Image (cartoon, rainbow, N blue to C red; front, side, top):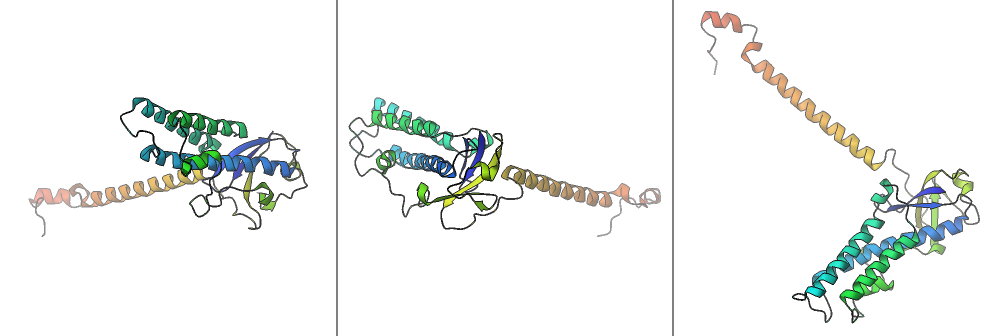
Length: 249
């Protein structure tokens, strides 16, 4: 299976495994589904946190141990889903599947049903995110979701055209790892990959910061050396002449 690092941006990426001889159209369909499920979970987490704070509807907001217990279960389900879809899974080499993300959404749905057995208000944003009927237009999530028919995949600054096989672009080796960019169609080539990855860049910055601190410390040590009495070539003579402690103001 080819291991794809699918990127929308540096902060939005995931791993996906798929056979090298898969049609590009099918690859697009699958990674778009993963993309949309990831953003759905992110919106669920965002709206779920608001729900937990404000506790809309007829449900009690405090003083009900059972309800508080169910709300805590809902928080845990949302936190688990968020960790599952997080970009850190790339570094951990955890490839995502549609089934595992869908199951995470269902865990949230079951927890919400226990916390709100009479159902959530129809106008509740969390309910729309849960049902997949929310419209992120005009919000911070505007443009997150993609329609597979309006999506493009890019590899090595080249678009992967529908009607071709993935292997025609990344090779037939099933152990290949390739970074592909997913985006809305019609926007041209996405930005090139950075010369060094994020972790290497952090390590380089840390190294140069430490180097600067070391240079400052050494410079301070040099200053202390030249200011010290024993660094004065005349100190021995001054001591014997009785002017060792005399300083000019």
